[in-house]
Image 1: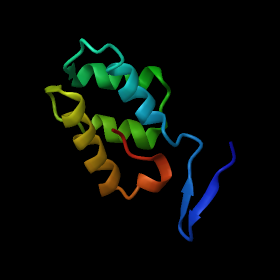
Image 2: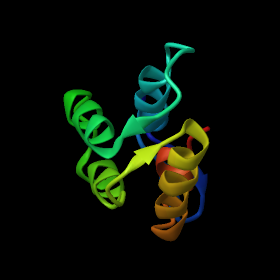
Image 3: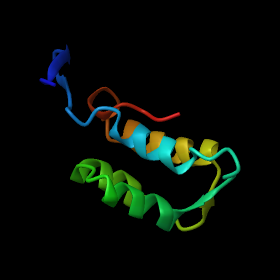
Image 4: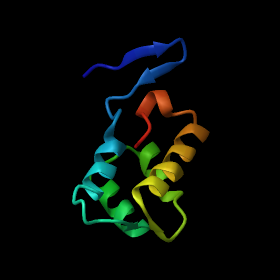
Length: 91
């Protein structure tokens, strides 16, 4: 997929939605209520996320995360870096 212009200063990355794929995979089993930071880091690395998104994942404080808390933490870092239009946010 080619990069496409979203606004005058933002290009959508070919990796747009890649972090959503990781989050969805971590919580694909309805019985999973929380994951550890280490689980998120390993899943991100295994999915060959770009360095920008690995940086976002590595900003997670140690601990366990429900899906909602994980998404809130990741989205906060994504928005803080102004990468929402580039990589997308997670839910």
